[in-house]
Image (cartoon, rainbow, N blue to C red; front, side, top):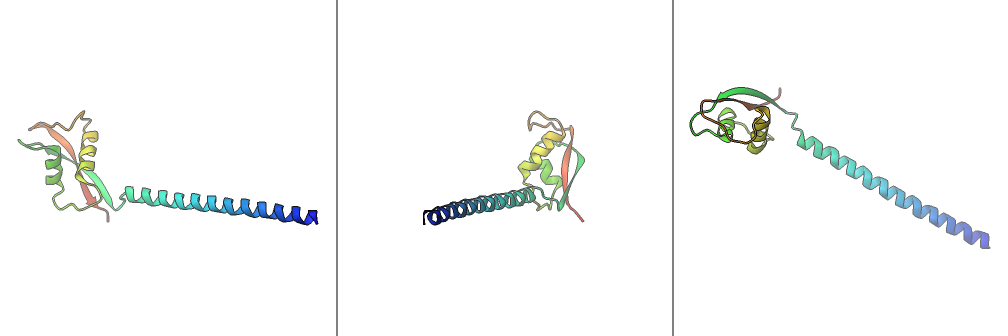
Length: 112
């Protein structure tokens, strides 16, 4: 009779461990799926970014230049993302630009 009780306790422990393991693996699987979804959202593959030379005019800023180059743009990048891309591409230490100087400005186009 004690062997039967010990067997039941052992089976219960195994069932508890198995249930816990399944829960952990299920949670891990869901987290991995959510990470992939987040990465997919962060990488807008439906758009290409090219750069064009743009000569700054009096009163232009990086943001106004981006707005002029990408007139009808309605894509996944916001203007601050594009401004940071511009700063990086032109090796600028700040967002200050000068009239008469030429800078590479991102031109975002829908992929075909």
